Image (cartoon, rainbow, N blue to C red; front, side, top):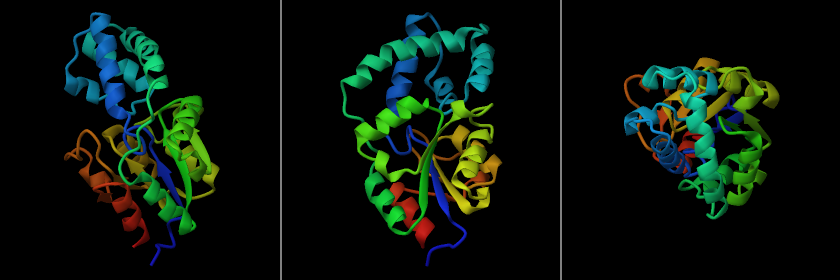
Length: 219
């Protein structure tokens, strides 16, 4: 039986719907190396879904340079943009099946992402899943990106639901913290890393894949 309190599902994009987070990580590391910055793989993982304000502060803490984040990000875009034009945008496992199941159940769907809206539109279209979503919400539309709650609060407002009526699907800690702070019910669908003790209390369910997540919502 469907939980009648669930009126909407809000999805992170990279690493949750699309198997693109590893691509981002590779190009972040490549960009930093070419610019002479020495960061560990673990340090780069901290920046998954992180909003610019938080990214600038954390990168300055690591490198000592207040301009490092923007330098690395801009060069990463220069390197990664042409590459992304040459590949098929990869979906995470069972994504289409999950979206079909949720739509058939009458649940409205939206994307709530740190990516720019034009990139979101392009990638979802190329991946063949744009049609499933009622709204595309970018963190660029709000004051603060993840892990602040702004993007999820705004997504709920646009969708016309209360946060407690929405499930948020996330793969990374910053996204989990954002959705939980907004008051959404959080399902983590791990990508590069699984939930650790810093976010385990914020997650209602940790799913094996997106179809597992959808079935949990509809059980």
